[in-house]
Length: 115
Length: 115
DNA sequence: GCTCTGCATAATAATATAATTATAGAACTG
DNA sequence: CAGTTCTATAATTATATTATTATGCAGAGC
Image (tube, rainbow over all chains, first blue to last red; front, side):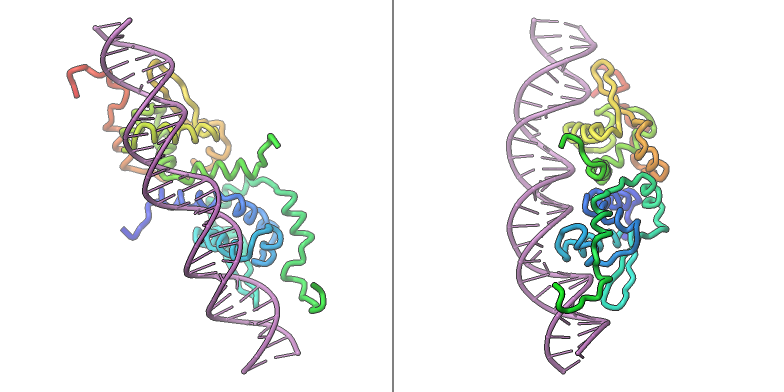
């Protein structure tokens, strides 16, 4: 039984969507592609935590990754039918969006003195 | 903080949808309204198990209940926007549908001799 | 080549979830 | 009213899930 039932797949999709942190991530990715360090900063959880969430989001095909130098950029997979359907009802999370604005993330090449 | 964030609500909706048994229940309710004993028979789990699932489905407003005599009939809430959206992509579970056909459920008034 | 930064994975601990059995209440049946 | 049926809830147990810390690997910059 290599083939998962479609029920199994759907359940897995919803399981991935059932975590608030992942919902926040998806919301943030609507704005633009983001790297792990961006998300770590905005979400306020540990880097490994973000990585784990991204893995699950990737596994079900909600996000795609693109490696750019040192960074890994994640973006929404616009070809995922269920995700696109659901995005139409996505709630805004103003606080996250504000934090995303304020965050410098990986974009600011660090001037080594500054902490 | 009486009001749940919409993120919380959405996450809860997906959590309810993330269980295969509940997905099967929703699929079955697409056919017609069903009572707990129907579902117990088709799903092959215990009666309290079905009741618990129905409670969660009711809590997030996916299903409605109607009491009819001795029975409690559940049906899909056609006014739930997210549910309606998602139903468009619902997978068929032929085996469940077959079992539903075959089941007599609560409809057959038991002729007391029959086991 | 050495060091630092960004990311992934492994191991672990705390918490949540779903099944079962046992029990109780409400509505029919005689 | 006594017995039976259908459903809900409580208690328990087994299993999943999510967070953290520790660790390793790859690319960038000196």
